[in-house]
Length: 331
Ligand code: CP
Image (cartoon, rainbow, N blue to C red):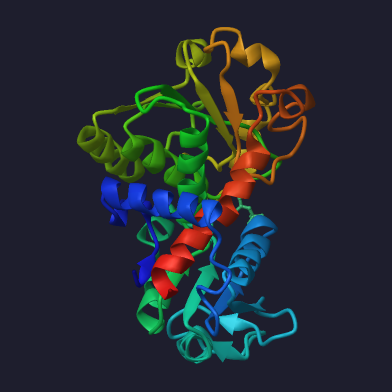
């Protein structure tokens, strides 16, 4: 495997193989599997889990890693094609990425959406450029519209919790002080669709997921025997749900216009998950979130501190499944 960029690049059986490898590595650790191998990690944006879990995973497999956060102790990297580089960035990714790739055996890159133009972000232009520039195996640590490592970890979490493949999975918009990217909702939707679940996207008006993202998930659901739908009716969506996956994202009706988005979300403070949201869900319904989560803005303490929340298990599973990705790429 030379690329781990999008769960949709893999057949369902290939995902299941990766999950089986993750379990095997947990049952029988291989602390020397990647001795002598080096993982380069480039973070254009902040992280807690992705940064720490990739470094820990590499170490647990006997390899090592280095981290670059452009502009923080290293040169700021220009990402725009044909930029006249008379600003803060001293180096272009056209040199920076191949140079970093030449120092390691695989490279992971995090580069969020610009958040200005939806069509441009949906095209994933920056990540495609990084893909072309990287001559080594490449891992998407979260791009404009994708977060496959999170999606793979969440698939494992659902399996561990014995959530049936055909169960109702509600991906719900929750509020946040500012618009956030579409990467996690898109990757989560794709994962649940590929798993064959009955997926409902619950969101207020103005926050519909782009047609392109929905269509891709609908195709995956058809292949897996599941279904994908979208609604703004909270009670209908949550009735019988076995999983409520909470996620914040920006208005797609006002993409790139943070003031219009702020006006829209001013009336949406009740989109904070509380225990009352679960009244008509399955009795043992779970609350998932990729983290970081803003307590009592996106999800209330009473839910995060209660038995439904499996957010820390999801975070641990990041380490476990990423070790499988690294092993498949480099062992
Ligand atoms: N869920 C996730 O990717 O967390 P970080 O942003 O902390 O890496």
